[in-house]
Length: 432
Ligand code: ADP
Ligand code: MG
Image (cartoon, rainbow, N blue to C red; front, side, top):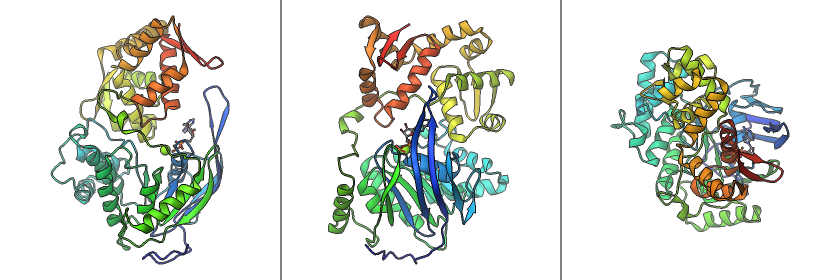
């Protein structure tokens, strides 16, 4: 296919991965090869999509290009310069919104600008602009819980745009938003991108939704999995504004379907969204990271501001949120406004001896519906069940999470509290 977009062709690249491979070291020390020899570039004024099944490494590529993860091999370039550390010029929109629930809309934008080191007069101006741009004017003082899914992601986009990024990275940005709202937001994002003399110049989006990439992208990089490799790159020459239901769109969707044979892109059945079935996902955190946060707070006299904690502990934004959320789920901290406070349980935990800590941990776990359910199940099944049953429960209750990841976190938390254990050889959970 030839490219006939309204943007001029160019040989210059903004952001580029050269020979990037990545391995994760698993808890048992084994290595998981996730990406193999990825070569890709984002040029000015284009929308690029990474398309592939869940778990193929899309988010890992995005994080490597953003400089959030250092690849095991290969390099990242920005405007032809090798990047080490965070890639300049990139703003990121996360799938899970990554909002601070205890901050207002304005505060959620401010925190990003503060982290970027901007002076306070510029912060308020930029925050106001970004909030207006995404249509959240009038909601400045609202908290995330008061916003719909679509509005939460508008806020996510405002945060990314507030730093005026040359490249906007979006990781499955609309997968937690209802279909109709997602259609509207995609069109708005394209409208934001279209003026050539304004940032963002380019967009990199991660998606497992073929219709979405056909609507959004100029170029679609199709990935295969285990390990993630570039399978092929498909140009999308359809003129804008695009129509999901046009014959040309549908043809391209069919073509991409054919490439991705074997029906690798399952959608979450609607029934799983039913209220009451869903459980709050477990943030991917280790018990030691949570204990570390509590110890830090204790040393600070029981509370500290979230920015201070992030700076003092040198944590990435998303990691920090996950740790605080986990500690809050477990009842060890409260998070009024921008503060994180130890609760009485949190105080009790940090001051306890190791064995007592485990006992407190166990008590707190049993207050969580997810752990209580599994514990009760184990007791009704003579103390042992197959991991498969739990996988299924996780997949139903937390359809947007990777069940292996949730399972992994669950096992670690449970093991620390001597609640139950998992045997990898037999693939069975048992009471301790
Ligand atoms: P995608 O975004 O395409 O769904 P990811 O990039 O999130 O895929 O993950 C690719 C693979 O790497 C998956 O098998 C996932 O379980 C694994 N993975 C991702 N992050 C980590 C991590 N921090 N530690 C270990 N494995 C990880
Ligand atoms: Mg992902």
